Image (tube, rainbow, N blue to C red):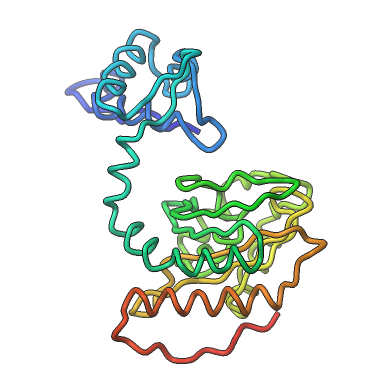
Length: 272
């Protein structure tokens, strides 16, 4: 959902507060998302909470700068200029460079969708994704963001997050994507405890019924959980123990790549 534009406070009645210029621009960009990749001007206006003339003016400026692009049908999408900027984010770039060779190996061995996710607020964002050709493909592209309770990477990151963040997620409405999506807070709490105990998340049909995801954490040189990697395959062909072993080996290799001079202590492969 698009955010409400940031407001600036003026003296007097709080009703005099007005959206800031920066808040309006951010609201236009925030109108886009995994399920709203292309938008018309009126859709941008509605999702950003802006008048049509204001949205038109801001969209024109963002087009000129390269933050947005317009197709032949007059619909707008995020532009390449933002991709250039996102590549400068240190949390994503170094991690992607260290992880990509091992993610590629995972994809070749499993023929599944492979994801590298990091937490952003109460959502998981894919900073790397390699898609497979499956009968029921799930949107899995770089930059996609999902609620943490519905993806394997998100469940791992939520399980190892601090208790305040966990309670924030558990106390909020949990969106259902399929009949198997866990939306009961008590059941989700038990699942998170199991993930902390085993070090691996296994979820079936959370977004699409035929699929299973297996995910494990990625640790920083200091031992903190900074990301998660996952493989999504069709449940009928899934071998969770084998996927867990492959993911664990890849996770350790990624961690070594983040700090080549440090020898990580050997951990047993998680048992399901």
